[in-house]
Image 1 (spheres, one colour):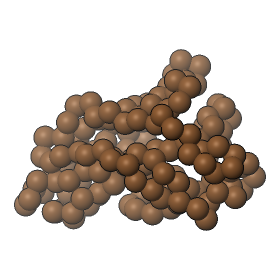
Image 2 (tube, helix red, strand yellow):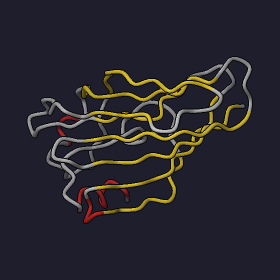
Image 3 (tube, one colour):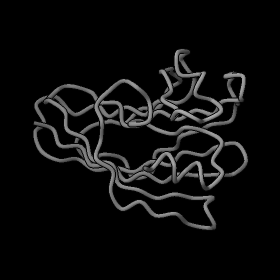
Image 4 (cartoon, one colour):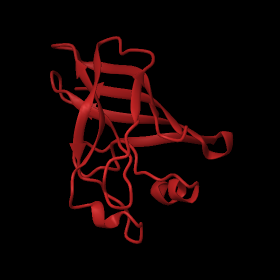
Length: 150
């Protein structure tokens, strides 16, 4: 449902973890579309084992021929209190919906930016942080992230 909603807003890309095919799937709450669709704000909730890192964001932009559109960036806002969040380039398989003009890109890894949360050793509890993703053309997503470490 969220993919259809984003596509209806004219978003030219598939965005963030949960839309890619690998990694833990978050619950997503409090989705707000702002500024005529140029900004989205949401809360993402993850669970991971103590001492185990979890990918909390994967963002990329692709042309119709599956080539990368450069310029996707991620910026950490409020850092986690009981761990570290890192950003690096990475890749994953997209998961475009059937009927999307980029669906034929699904078997090929897309290159983009990855946000990963690393809990402190022996930490058990809930940690919180925020990050923003910016896309070519000025679109942005604000993510409030809660990670339950068990």
